[in-house]
Each structure stands twice: as structure tokens, then as C-alpha cells.
Length: 382
Image (cartoon, rainbow, N blue to C red; front, top):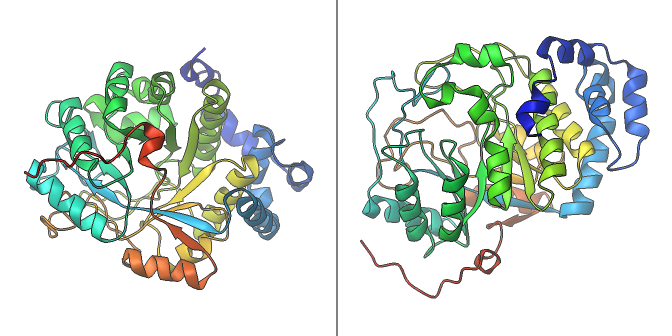
């Protein structure tokens, strides 16, 4: 049984009611369990309104578990947008096909310039991002971008349109290490309201993407929801449900969860559900108590003060110096961003903050030899 079949056994309204009905006693019972023994009912208690008085206790335990497993380090990464061309109409995204913005697909020469700029900031890992456009930015384009990246970076991640299993299998020998794919919201009817046309409108195909990634043997898979599209507690439960399914089914794979909240963008959409900073702290800590192995990632969507505090809550990975527009690092810094960032510090500034707080910045995910690659052949300059 794939995740879609398991997901279809749950009802959004019933899950919401179950979370809201949790009591302080349920929270106390969840907190009394040893590491690794929490189930999804315990997790529901930890993200419920009843857990609000326990956030400090949760934060202390989350910090302890994170340091025990990951040490006092933070992996830094930079997203690089290859293209803002998109065939989807999504009401919350600045790249939506109906938004009248200049569209750009980076050429080989422009890709190399962006790689050079990111490498000069200290990164040895790259996250490649595109709008969802299979025809213009498909597998062949991505394979070429990976080929160029191998001169500069030890590992490559991507956040692009969902692909078939065969496509992921084809990309692995080119250097693909990890894939981020967010369901946006797990509320099926709300999802249809936000995704008006294009391939992304297919809820089931997107929901089954992590299964395809797992079968293809991708080493790390990132899950998440876009907070603000619907009730954040319920979306959080379904991300956890998805995570636990994936961990059981594809146990050789590493997993990460991200926590994006809606930020201002072209074609602005006001959040349906407001997630406060305190709410986000609660969710981060709940995930850490659910899984000590899970990587938790926080982007520059969040403001500087919150990110400074989050390193002690359970976060293990942070973006730094991010640009959310194609060519934003060197080629075309003024092009339209997908969304506004909040923490505008340079990677060096973020690394200095980490050092001042007793943490070490790590600039790559894993070494190239882990993927069977060595930097023995220089890429021909374009």
C-alpha cells in the first residue's frame, strides 16, 4: 500500500477535531515517553492547543536531543533558482503562470556564474530550484545543470516539479543526492482552490512523489507544508503521517522537514491560517521529540531574531544569503523574487552568529565520494 491509500483513510475534519480535543494529560503522557517511542497520537497532543503551557519543557528536551544526535553544528545551504518559468497557476506563488513578470531560464554561462558566486561564499552544497515547467526545464536541462555543478559542489539537491520514477532514476548517476517536494497543503479541497491549472493541480500525483523518490533510491527526501494555506496544526499532522510512512517503507533514506510560512510575493495572498512564532516553536520541538534522526530546516523566510533562537530548538539546517530569483547572486540581481526573504544577512554573518553562540557552520551535506563521484575532471568552461 502506498501513502495515497493510507492518506485516503483519514478525514481532515476528524483529524482537526482530534487535535483540538487533546488535553494537558495527553501532553504529559506524551512527554513521559522515552525518545523514539512517541506515536502520532502523542504527536497530535504536542501540536495541540493543550501543549501551549509545555513549550518551554518541549524546547529544553528538543535542544538536548538535537545536541546528542547532531552536535553543536548547523548545515548552511543556498538555494539557486535556475528558472522562474512555470506552467502552473497557483494563487500563492510569485512565479504563477498568470503573473505578468519577466521570465528567465539560465544559460550554461549564467549557471556557471551563479555557481562561482555561491562557491565564493563558502558553500560546498547546492540546492537547485526551478518553476514547474517540464518542457522548458526538464530532465535534460537538469542533467546538464548537475554536470556543471560537479566542478563546484560536493553534493546536489533539487526542488523542482514532481517527476516520474524513471526520471529520478536517470538523474541519480548525474549527481542527485536529495529532493525536496512539499505537498503545500494536505487538505484536498483547499488544494484545488489554490492550484487552478497546470500539472500541480493533480493532488494525487504530487502526494505520491515521495514514494517515487523512495523507490528510485534517492538518498534524502524533504517533506513539508506551506503554512498559511490551511489549518497549520492539521497540515503538521499530515506531514508527520507522511514522514512516519516513508521512514517505515524506505528506511535506508534520510529525511528532512521544512517549515515555510507564506511570505509577500507577486499576486499576494493573505494566509488563511496564521502561525505565530510561538506556534512554529511548538511544531519544531514536536518534530524533534517525534524523531531524533530527523533533519529540521529553516529558511531565510524567517526573521533574523527567530533564526538566532531556532538553532537551540532543534533546527539542524539553515539557508543563508538566499536569492529567490534566477540569476540573483550575480547574473541578474534585480529580477523578480519568488517571495521576499526576511533574514538578509550574508552567509559569513550567519556563520559568525553561529560561532558566537557556540555552534559550528557546516558548508556541505556530504562528500562527493559518498555519491560515487570525485572531482577529477574539470568541467569545460562555457
